[in-house]
Length: 241
Image (cartoon, rainbow, N blue to C red; front, side, top):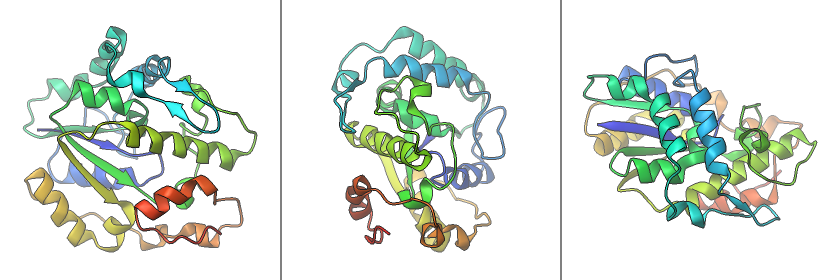
């Protein structure tokens, strides 16, 4: 069984990576404190290969349609396999990986690995953009957007881009959507859902309830009108400030 986690940086994906590791899933040869499979340079370069085929339409709209039908670039395939070498070479029955940048290449990952288990990990975007992440400036990965010097706005745009990639990608055979907030506040029930999806027992980890709703005490900018659709879709509190 092969498992991967899809979700923007600071969406709480380390929680599911640590949970999978604690539950006997081999998550790669070397992990950092966030549960990311490292080194990740090959995957970062794969993101840049992928982004060459994304068309920016302006006004925070991107066209991903070409990615669903064109031949996948052989260099992309080589880079992904190189990054995942320790996962593929492991004799473990249950294997997987977590790296937030995987979300940037989700359409081609689904095409390369149509039969694996996908866990989509989502967090309230207002909390998600409060911390810095490597994906904050999409231009690092060759993605075109209207650059801004406002740090929070850059993070919000990165969040928006990744949300749009996810929505634009045809749903794979095996996919579950999990809210970080549900995992923290209702871990037993959420683990039960994951057990039903994955087919094996899941271990509990320590969680921090204070990580939920941090935006409510935040003095910085954390609300953007383009969050509204996802807030409604995933039943988050709709108050934007």
